[in-house]
Length: 479
Image (cartoon, rainbow, N blue to C red; front, side, top):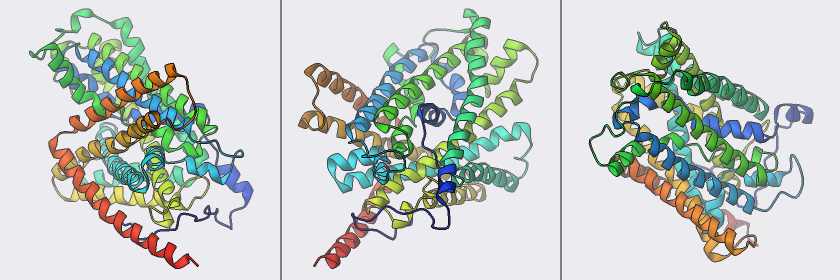
Protein backbone atom coordinates (compact mmCIF):
# COMPACT_ATOMS: atom_id res chain seq x y z
CA UNK A 1 0.00 0.00 0.00
CA UNK A 2 2.99 2.30 0.28
CA UNK A 3 2.68 4.00 -3.10
CA UNK A 4 5.24 6.74 -3.34
CA UNK A 5 6.77 6.86 -6.78
CA UNK A 6 5.60 7.21 -10.37
CA UNK A 7 6.98 7.29 -13.90
CA UNK A 8 5.84 9.19 -16.96
CA UNK A 9 3.84 7.23 -19.56
CA UNK A 10 6.68 6.85 -22.11
CA UNK A 11 8.93 5.11 -19.59
CA UNK A 12 11.15 2.49 -21.28
CA UNK A 13 10.82 -1.21 -20.60
CA UNK A 14 12.73 -2.06 -17.42
CA UNK A 15 15.74 -4.23 -18.18
CA UNK A 16 16.86 -7.43 -16.55
CA UNK A 17 19.61 -7.14 -13.98
CA UNK A 18 22.77 -6.39 -16.05
CA UNK A 19 24.83 -8.94 -14.18
CA UNK A 20 22.53 -11.77 -15.26
CA UNK A 21 23.53 -13.24 -18.64
CA UNK A 22 20.94 -13.73 -21.32
CA UNK A 23 21.19 -17.50 -21.09
CA UNK A 24 20.30 -17.37 -17.39
CA UNK A 25 17.27 -15.23 -18.11
CA UNK A 26 16.13 -17.59 -20.83
CA UNK A 27 16.67 -20.61 -18.64
CA UNK A 28 14.57 -19.34 -15.74
CA UNK A 29 11.97 -17.22 -17.59
CA UNK A 30 9.62 -19.25 -19.75
CA UNK A 31 6.25 -18.29 -21.15
CA UNK A 32 3.24 -20.36 -20.18
CA UNK A 33 1.61 -22.61 -22.76
CA UNK A 34 -2.01 -23.75 -22.65
CA UNK A 35 -1.46 -26.53 -20.04
CA UNK A 36 0.26 -24.26 -17.51
CA UNK A 37 -2.14 -21.35 -18.15
CA UNK A 38 -5.08 -23.71 -17.61
CA UNK A 39 -3.46 -25.10 -14.45
CA UNK A 40 -3.03 -21.51 -13.23
CA UNK A 41 -6.76 -20.84 -13.64
CA UNK A 42 -7.88 -24.14 -12.10
CA UNK A 43 -5.32 -23.99 -9.31
CA UNK A 44 -6.27 -20.45 -8.34
CA UNK A 45 -10.01 -21.11 -8.43
CA UNK A 46 -9.76 -24.26 -6.34
CA UNK A 47 -7.95 -23.58 -3.08
CA UNK A 48 -8.80 -25.21 0.23
CA UNK A 49 -12.45 -24.22 0.40
CA UNK A 50 -13.57 -27.14 -1.72
CA UNK A 51 -12.82 -29.52 1.15
CA UNK A 52 -15.61 -27.92 3.20
CA UNK A 53 -18.07 -27.01 0.44
CA UNK A 54 -20.27 -30.15 0.60
CA UNK A 55 -20.92 -29.63 4.31
CA UNK A 56 -21.51 -25.89 3.77
CA UNK A 57 -24.33 -26.43 1.28
CA UNK A 58 -25.72 -29.68 2.76
CA UNK A 59 -28.29 -27.82 4.96
CA UNK A 60 -30.02 -26.68 1.75
CA UNK A 61 -30.30 -30.21 0.34
CA UNK A 62 -29.53 -31.41 -3.17
CA UNK A 63 -31.17 -28.27 -4.56
CA UNK A 64 -27.77 -26.68 -3.94
CA UNK A 65 -26.53 -28.59 -7.01
CA UNK A 66 -28.82 -26.35 -9.07
CA UNK A 67 -27.07 -23.34 -7.53
CA UNK A 68 -23.77 -24.82 -8.72
CA UNK A 69 -25.16 -25.03 -12.23
CA UNK A 70 -26.44 -21.43 -12.23
CA UNK A 71 -23.15 -20.05 -10.91
CA UNK A 72 -21.14 -22.12 -13.36
CA UNK A 73 -23.00 -20.49 -16.24
CA UNK A 74 -22.16 -17.04 -14.83
CA UNK A 75 -18.51 -17.92 -14.21
CA UNK A 76 -18.04 -19.32 -17.72
CA UNK A 77 -19.71 -16.20 -19.15
CA UNK A 78 -17.15 -14.10 -17.28
CA UNK A 79 -14.39 -16.38 -18.59
CA UNK A 80 -15.64 -15.86 -22.15
CA UNK A 81 -15.64 -12.09 -21.62
CA UNK A 82 -12.00 -12.21 -20.53
CA UNK A 83 -11.18 -14.30 -23.57
CA UNK A 84 -12.87 -11.85 -25.93
CA UNK A 85 -11.15 -8.87 -24.30
CA UNK A 86 -7.75 -10.59 -24.55
CA UNK A 87 -8.36 -11.34 -28.23
CA UNK A 88 -9.41 -7.72 -28.86
CA UNK A 89 -5.96 -6.36 -27.98
CA UNK A 90 -3.56 -6.12 -30.94
CA UNK A 91 -1.03 -8.95 -31.11
CA UNK A 92 2.60 -8.21 -30.21
CA UNK A 93 4.69 -7.34 -33.27
CA UNK A 94 7.20 -10.12 -32.70
CA UNK A 95 7.66 -13.32 -30.78
CA UNK A 96 8.96 -14.38 -27.41
CA UNK A 97 10.72 -11.78 -25.33
CA UNK A 98 9.22 -8.80 -27.15
CA UNK A 99 8.88 -5.87 -24.72
CA UNK A 100 5.47 -5.00 -26.15
CA UNK A 101 4.15 -8.31 -24.86
CA UNK A 102 4.31 -6.89 -21.34
CA UNK A 103 1.53 -4.47 -22.26
CA UNK A 104 -0.85 -7.43 -22.33
CA UNK A 105 -0.26 -8.24 -18.65
CA UNK A 106 -2.75 -7.06 -16.07
CA UNK A 107 -6.03 -8.50 -17.35
CA UNK A 108 -8.96 -6.45 -15.97
CA UNK A 109 -6.63 -3.50 -15.34
CA UNK A 110 -5.66 -3.35 -19.01
CA UNK A 111 -9.26 -3.74 -20.18
CA UNK A 112 -10.64 -1.08 -17.81
CA UNK A 113 -7.90 1.42 -18.61
CA UNK A 114 -8.26 0.85 -22.35
CA UNK A 115 -11.99 1.53 -22.26
CA UNK A 116 -12.34 4.19 -19.56
CA UNK A 117 -8.93 5.72 -18.93
CA UNK A 118 -6.32 5.85 -16.18
CA UNK A 119 -8.64 6.31 -13.21
CA UNK A 120 -10.74 3.21 -13.93
CA UNK A 121 -7.58 1.25 -14.63
CA UNK A 122 -6.06 2.33 -11.33
CA UNK A 123 -9.19 1.34 -9.39
CA UNK A 124 -9.08 -2.11 -10.99
CA UNK A 125 -5.38 -2.53 -10.18
CA UNK A 126 -5.69 -1.15 -6.65
CA UNK A 127 -8.69 -3.32 -5.74
CA UNK A 128 -7.12 -6.43 -7.23
CA UNK A 129 -3.81 -5.85 -5.47
CA UNK A 130 -5.55 -5.55 -2.09
CA UNK A 131 -7.46 -8.75 -2.83
CA UNK A 132 -4.32 -10.75 -3.58
CA UNK A 133 -2.16 -10.01 -0.58
CA UNK A 134 -4.99 -10.20 1.96
CA UNK A 135 -6.17 -13.45 0.38
CA UNK A 136 -2.64 -14.86 0.54
CA UNK A 137 -2.54 -14.25 4.27
CA UNK A 138 -5.94 -15.90 4.67
CA UNK A 139 -4.85 -18.94 2.65
CA UNK A 140 -1.72 -19.41 4.74
CA UNK A 141 -3.63 -19.18 8.03
CA UNK A 142 -6.22 -21.67 6.76
CA UNK A 143 -3.48 -24.02 5.57
CA UNK A 144 -2.07 -24.19 9.10
CA UNK A 145 -5.33 -25.81 10.20
CA UNK A 146 -4.76 -28.64 7.74
CA UNK A 147 -1.06 -28.88 8.64
CA UNK A 148 -2.05 -29.37 12.27
CA UNK A 149 -3.72 -32.67 11.30
CA UNK A 150 -0.34 -33.97 10.14
CA UNK A 151 2.00 -32.13 12.52
CA UNK A 152 0.72 -30.50 15.72
CA UNK A 153 1.54 -26.82 15.23
CA UNK A 154 -1.50 -25.15 16.77
CA UNK A 155 -0.47 -25.98 20.32
CA UNK A 156 1.34 -22.64 20.50
CA UNK A 157 0.35 -19.56 18.51
CA UNK A 158 3.94 -18.66 17.62
CA UNK A 159 4.54 -22.12 16.20
CA UNK A 160 1.37 -21.72 14.15
CA UNK A 161 2.46 -18.24 13.06
CA UNK A 162 5.87 -19.52 11.94
CA UNK A 163 4.21 -22.34 10.00
CA UNK A 164 1.91 -19.84 8.24
CA UNK A 165 4.89 -17.66 7.29
CA UNK A 166 6.79 -20.65 5.88
CA UNK A 167 3.74 -21.64 3.85
CA UNK A 168 3.66 -18.13 2.37
CA UNK A 169 7.35 -17.78 1.66
CA UNK A 170 7.91 -21.12 -0.09
CA UNK A 171 5.69 -20.16 -3.07
CA UNK A 172 7.27 -16.70 -3.03
CA UNK A 173 10.72 -18.29 -3.41
CA UNK A 174 9.43 -20.25 -6.41
CA UNK A 175 8.32 -16.94 -7.91
CA UNK A 176 11.70 -15.33 -7.26
CA UNK A 177 13.31 -18.26 -9.08
CA UNK A 178 11.50 -17.33 -12.29
CA UNK A 179 8.41 -18.10 -14.35
CA UNK A 180 9.81 -21.51 -15.30
CA UNK A 181 9.67 -22.56 -11.64
CA UNK A 182 6.27 -20.92 -11.14
CA UNK A 183 4.86 -22.89 -14.05
CA UNK A 184 6.42 -26.15 -12.88
CA UNK A 185 5.12 -25.77 -9.31
CA UNK A 186 1.67 -24.81 -10.57
CA UNK A 187 1.43 -27.77 -12.94
CA UNK A 188 2.67 -30.31 -10.39
CA UNK A 189 0.53 -28.99 -7.53
CA UNK A 190 -2.57 -28.92 -9.75
CA UNK A 191 -2.04 -32.57 -10.73
CA UNK A 192 -1.40 -33.57 -7.11
CA UNK A 193 -4.40 -31.70 -5.78
CA UNK A 194 -6.77 -33.07 -8.39
CA UNK A 195 -5.73 -36.68 -7.96
CA UNK A 196 -7.47 -37.11 -4.55
CA UNK A 197 -10.32 -34.79 -5.54
CA UNK A 198 -11.03 -36.83 -8.65
CA UNK A 199 -10.68 -40.01 -6.59
CA UNK A 200 -13.61 -38.85 -4.47
CA UNK A 201 -15.48 -37.16 -7.32
CA UNK A 202 -15.34 -40.14 -9.68
CA UNK A 203 -14.72 -43.02 -7.27
CA UNK A 204 -17.54 -41.86 -5.03
CA UNK A 205 -20.02 -42.48 -7.83
CA UNK A 206 -19.32 -46.22 -7.50
CA UNK A 207 -20.21 -46.07 -3.79
CA UNK A 208 -23.18 -43.79 -4.35
CA UNK A 209 -26.26 -44.47 -2.23
CA UNK A 210 -29.35 -42.40 -3.01
CA UNK A 211 -30.58 -42.88 0.55
CA UNK A 212 -27.75 -40.63 1.76
CA UNK A 213 -28.94 -37.65 -0.28
CA UNK A 214 -31.60 -36.50 2.13
CA UNK A 215 -34.40 -34.12 1.05
CA UNK A 216 -34.22 -32.16 -2.20
CA UNK A 217 -34.95 -28.88 -0.40
CA UNK A 218 -33.96 -29.14 3.25
CA UNK A 219 -33.97 -25.41 3.97
CA UNK A 220 -37.74 -25.07 4.44
CA UNK A 221 -37.88 -21.99 2.20
CA UNK A 222 -39.12 -21.75 -1.36
CA UNK A 223 -37.15 -23.23 -4.23
CA UNK A 224 -35.86 -19.91 -5.54
CA UNK A 225 -34.95 -18.76 -2.03
CA UNK A 226 -33.05 -21.99 -1.34
CA UNK A 227 -31.11 -21.76 -4.61
CA UNK A 228 -30.28 -18.12 -3.90
CA UNK A 229 -29.12 -18.88 -0.34
CA UNK A 230 -26.93 -21.76 -1.50
CA UNK A 231 -25.54 -19.61 -4.31
CA UNK A 232 -24.51 -16.94 -1.80
CA UNK A 233 -22.25 -19.49 -0.12
CA UNK A 234 -20.87 -20.83 -3.40
CA UNK A 235 -20.35 -17.48 -5.13
CA UNK A 236 -16.75 -16.94 -4.11
CA UNK A 237 -15.70 -20.45 -5.09
CA UNK A 238 -15.09 -19.10 -8.58
CA UNK A 239 -12.77 -16.22 -7.71
CA UNK A 240 -9.60 -16.67 -9.76
CA UNK A 241 -11.27 -16.99 -13.15
CA UNK A 242 -9.18 -13.99 -14.28
CA UNK A 243 -5.82 -15.71 -13.61
CA UNK A 244 -4.75 -16.31 -17.21
CA UNK A 245 -5.86 -12.81 -18.27
CA UNK A 246 -3.84 -11.15 -15.50
CA UNK A 247 -0.73 -13.14 -16.51
CA UNK A 248 -1.26 -12.64 -20.27
CA UNK A 249 2.18 -11.03 -20.57
CA UNK A 250 3.75 -14.36 -19.61
CA UNK A 251 1.49 -16.51 -21.82
CA UNK A 252 2.38 -17.77 -25.28
CA UNK A 253 0.07 -16.46 -28.00
CA UNK A 254 -2.17 -14.68 -25.45
CA UNK A 255 -4.85 -13.76 -27.99
CA UNK A 256 -5.76 -17.43 -28.32
CA UNK A 257 -4.39 -19.02 -25.18
CA UNK A 258 -5.93 -16.71 -22.55
CA UNK A 259 -9.49 -17.33 -23.68
CA UNK A 260 -9.04 -21.07 -24.08
CA UNK A 261 -7.22 -21.50 -20.76
CA UNK A 262 -9.79 -19.37 -18.91
CA UNK A 263 -12.80 -21.29 -20.24
CA UNK A 264 -11.20 -24.74 -19.91
CA UNK A 265 -9.87 -23.97 -16.43
CA UNK A 266 -13.19 -22.57 -15.20
CA UNK A 267 -15.18 -25.45 -16.68
CA UNK A 268 -12.72 -27.97 -15.21
CA UNK A 269 -12.94 -26.42 -11.76
CA UNK A 270 -16.75 -26.38 -11.99
CA UNK A 271 -16.78 -30.07 -12.96
CA UNK A 272 -14.62 -30.97 -9.95
CA UNK A 273 -16.84 -28.87 -7.66
CA UNK A 274 -20.04 -30.45 -8.95
CA UNK A 275 -18.89 -34.08 -9.09
CA UNK A 276 -17.07 -33.81 -5.75
CA UNK A 277 -20.12 -32.39 -3.98
CA UNK A 278 -22.44 -34.92 -5.60
CA UNK A 279 -20.18 -37.82 -4.58
CA UNK A 280 -19.92 -36.64 -0.99
CA UNK A 281 -23.70 -36.22 -0.89
CA UNK A 282 -24.09 -39.81 -2.02
CA UNK A 283 -21.51 -41.42 0.28
CA UNK A 284 -22.08 -39.57 3.57
CA UNK A 285 -25.48 -39.64 5.22
CA UNK A 286 -27.21 -36.23 5.10
CA UNK A 287 -27.77 -35.90 8.84
CA UNK A 288 -24.07 -36.53 9.42
CA UNK A 289 -22.92 -34.33 6.55
CA UNK A 290 -24.64 -31.18 7.83
CA UNK A 291 -22.51 -31.32 10.99
CA UNK A 292 -19.29 -32.60 9.41
CA UNK A 293 -16.03 -30.67 9.80
CA UNK A 294 -14.27 -32.79 7.16
CA UNK A 295 -16.77 -34.00 4.54
CA UNK A 296 -14.15 -35.30 2.10
CA UNK A 297 -12.45 -37.24 4.90
CA UNK A 298 -15.80 -38.78 5.83
CA UNK A 299 -16.37 -39.70 2.20
CA UNK A 300 -12.96 -41.37 1.88
CA UNK A 301 -13.53 -43.33 5.09
CA UNK A 302 -16.99 -44.40 3.91
CA UNK A 303 -15.62 -45.51 0.53
CA UNK A 304 -12.58 -47.47 1.67
CA UNK A 305 -13.10 -48.03 5.39
CA UNK A 306 -10.62 -47.19 8.12
CA UNK A 307 -9.87 -43.77 9.51
CA UNK A 308 -7.06 -42.58 7.27
CA UNK A 309 -9.23 -40.16 5.29
CA UNK A 310 -8.43 -37.30 7.65
CA UNK A 311 -4.71 -37.11 7.05
CA UNK A 312 -5.08 -37.97 3.34
CA UNK A 313 -7.45 -35.07 2.76
CA UNK A 314 -5.34 -32.77 4.97
CA UNK A 315 -2.32 -33.55 2.80
CA UNK A 316 -4.34 -32.90 -0.36
CA UNK A 317 -5.60 -29.60 1.06
CA UNK A 318 -2.04 -28.51 1.90
CA UNK A 319 -0.89 -29.26 -1.65
CA UNK A 320 -3.96 -27.45 -2.99
CA UNK A 321 -3.35 -24.33 -0.91
CA UNK A 322 0.38 -24.26 -1.66
CA UNK A 323 -0.34 -24.37 -5.38
CA UNK A 324 -3.01 -21.72 -4.97
CA UNK A 325 -0.55 -19.48 -3.11
CA UNK A 326 2.02 -20.02 -5.86
CA UNK A 327 -0.41 -18.77 -8.50
CA UNK A 328 -1.87 -15.92 -6.45
CA UNK A 329 1.62 -14.68 -5.58
CA UNK A 330 2.38 -14.31 -9.28
CA UNK A 331 -0.95 -12.56 -9.90
CA UNK A 332 -0.31 -10.20 -6.99
CA UNK A 333 2.73 -8.83 -8.83
CA UNK A 334 1.39 -8.82 -12.40
CA UNK A 335 -1.29 -6.15 -12.03
CA UNK A 336 0.97 -3.65 -10.17
CA UNK A 337 3.63 -4.37 -12.81
CA UNK A 338 1.26 -3.42 -15.63
CA UNK A 339 0.07 -0.33 -13.75
CA UNK A 340 3.65 0.74 -12.94
CA UNK A 341 4.57 0.62 -16.65
CA UNK A 342 1.78 3.13 -17.24
CA UNK A 343 2.83 5.39 -14.36
CA UNK A 344 -0.09 4.45 -12.11
CA UNK A 345 1.96 2.49 -9.55
CA UNK A 346 5.49 3.12 -8.23
CA UNK A 347 8.25 2.58 -10.78
CA UNK A 348 9.84 -0.14 -8.62
CA UNK A 349 6.89 -2.45 -9.34
CA UNK A 350 7.88 -2.47 -13.04
CA UNK A 351 11.19 -4.25 -12.39
CA UNK A 352 11.35 -7.78 -13.71
CA UNK A 353 13.85 -10.55 -13.23
CA UNK A 354 13.57 -13.98 -14.81
CA UNK A 355 10.13 -13.07 -16.10
CA UNK A 356 8.75 -12.22 -12.64
CA UNK A 357 8.06 -8.72 -11.22
CA UNK A 358 10.21 -9.39 -8.17
CA UNK A 359 9.44 -6.14 -6.33
CA UNK A 360 5.73 -6.83 -6.57
CA UNK A 361 6.23 -10.36 -5.25
CA UNK A 362 8.41 -9.09 -2.41
CA UNK A 363 6.05 -6.31 -1.33
CA UNK A 364 3.06 -8.63 -1.49
CA UNK A 365 4.61 -11.41 0.59
CA UNK A 366 5.86 -8.89 3.19
CA UNK A 367 2.41 -7.28 3.53
CA UNK A 368 0.75 -10.69 3.75
CA UNK A 369 3.30 -11.77 6.36
CA UNK A 370 2.68 -8.67 8.47
CA UNK A 371 -1.06 -9.29 8.32
CA UNK A 372 -0.47 -12.92 9.32
CA UNK A 373 1.64 -11.92 12.32
CA UNK A 374 -1.01 -9.38 13.31
CA UNK A 375 -3.63 -12.12 13.13
CA UNK A 376 -1.75 -14.26 15.64
CA UNK A 377 -0.70 -11.42 17.96
CA UNK A 378 -4.11 -9.73 18.17
CA UNK A 379 -5.57 -12.67 20.04
CA UNK A 380 -8.77 -12.41 17.99
CA UNK A 381 -9.48 -13.47 14.44
CA UNK A 382 -12.40 -11.04 14.13
CA UNK A 383 -10.45 -8.22 12.50
CA UNK A 384 -8.72 -10.68 10.23
CA UNK A 385 -12.03 -12.24 9.20
CA UNK A 386 -13.43 -8.81 8.37
CA UNK A 387 -10.45 -8.07 6.13
CA UNK A 388 -10.86 -11.38 4.37
CA UNK A 389 -14.54 -10.65 3.82
CA UNK A 390 -13.61 -7.27 2.34
CA UNK A 391 -11.58 -9.01 -0.35
CA UNK A 392 -14.72 -10.69 -1.59
CA UNK A 393 -15.93 -7.23 -2.53
CA UNK A 394 -12.63 -5.80 -3.81
CA UNK A 395 -12.21 -8.83 -6.11
CA UNK A 396 -15.45 -7.99 -7.88
CA UNK A 397 -14.40 -4.41 -8.72
CA UNK A 398 -12.06 -5.46 -11.57
CA UNK A 399 -14.64 -8.03 -12.72
CA UNK A 400 -17.31 -5.36 -13.09
CA UNK A 401 -14.95 -2.91 -14.79
CA UNK A 402 -13.76 -5.55 -17.27
CA UNK A 403 -17.32 -6.57 -18.08
CA UNK A 404 -18.26 -2.92 -18.49
CA UNK A 405 -15.32 -2.54 -20.89
CA UNK A 406 -16.66 -5.37 -23.04
CA UNK A 407 -20.13 -3.82 -23.07
CA UNK A 408 -18.54 -0.47 -23.99
CA UNK A 409 -16.74 -2.02 -26.96
CA UNK A 410 -19.87 -3.82 -28.14
CA UNK A 411 -22.15 -0.78 -27.90
CA UNK A 412 -19.65 1.67 -29.37
CA UNK A 413 -18.75 -0.67 -32.21
CA UNK A 414 -15.03 -0.58 -31.42
CA UNK A 415 -12.70 -3.45 -32.03
CA UNK A 416 -12.71 -6.06 -34.78
CA UNK A 417 -15.72 -6.29 -37.05
CA UNK A 418 -18.12 -9.14 -36.35
CA UNK A 419 -21.37 -10.27 -37.86
CA UNK A 420 -24.69 -9.51 -36.22
CA UNK A 421 -25.10 -13.04 -34.82
CA UNK A 422 -21.75 -12.86 -33.06
CA UNK A 423 -22.54 -9.38 -31.77
CA UNK A 424 -25.79 -10.64 -30.23
CA UNK A 425 -24.01 -13.65 -28.73
CA UNK A 426 -21.27 -11.52 -27.22
CA UNK A 427 -23.89 -9.14 -25.86
CA UNK A 428 -25.78 -11.95 -24.14
CA UNK A 429 -22.56 -13.36 -22.66
CA UNK A 430 -21.56 -9.90 -21.40
CA UNK A 431 -24.99 -9.42 -19.82
CA UNK A 432 -24.74 -12.76 -18.00
CA UNK A 433 -21.21 -11.91 -16.83
CA UNK A 434 -22.42 -8.52 -15.58
CA UNK A 435 -25.25 -10.17 -13.65
CA UNK A 436 -22.78 -12.65 -12.15
CA UNK A 437 -20.42 -9.83 -11.11
CA UNK A 438 -23.24 -7.81 -9.54
CA UNK A 439 -24.40 -10.91 -7.68
CA UNK A 440 -20.88 -11.28 -6.31
CA UNK A 441 -21.07 -7.74 -4.94
CA UNK A 442 -24.47 -8.41 -3.38
CA UNK A 443 -23.26 -11.69 -1.92
CA UNK A 444 -20.39 -9.96 -0.15
CA UNK A 445 -22.86 -8.39 2.28
CA UNK A 446 -23.40 -4.85 3.48
CA UNK A 447 -20.48 -4.80 5.92
CA UNK A 448 -17.98 -6.05 3.33
CA UNK A 449 -19.16 -3.53 0.73
CA UNK A 450 -18.95 -0.71 3.28
CA UNK A 451 -15.42 -1.63 4.36
CA UNK A 452 -14.36 -2.30 0.77
CA UNK A 453 -15.50 1.14 -0.37
CA UNK A 454 -13.25 2.66 2.30
CA UNK A 455 -10.32 0.74 0.81
CA UNK A 456 -11.23 2.06 -2.64
CA UNK A 457 -11.51 5.64 -1.37
CA UNK A 458 -8.04 5.33 0.16
CA UNK A 459 -6.87 4.37 -3.32
CA UNK A 460 -8.52 7.47 -4.78
CA UNK A 461 -6.32 9.64 -2.55
CA UNK A 462 -3.23 7.72 -3.64
CA UNK A 463 -4.22 8.15 -7.28
CA UNK A 464 -4.61 11.90 -6.78
CA UNK A 465 -1.04 12.19 -5.46
CA UNK A 466 0.45 10.07 -8.24
CA UNK A 467 -1.52 11.81 -10.97
CA UNK A 468 -0.28 15.17 -9.70
CA UNK A 469 3.33 13.97 -9.62
CA UNK A 470 3.04 12.58 -13.13
CA UNK A 471 1.54 15.81 -14.42
CA UNK A 472 4.41 17.76 -12.84
CA UNK A 473 6.95 15.42 -14.44
CA UNK A 474 5.33 15.80 -17.85
CA UNK A 475 5.25 19.61 -17.48
CA UNK A 476 8.91 19.82 -16.50
CA UNK A 477 9.88 17.55 -19.40
CA UNK A 478 8.01 19.67 -21.97
CA UNK A 479 10.14 22.12 -24.05
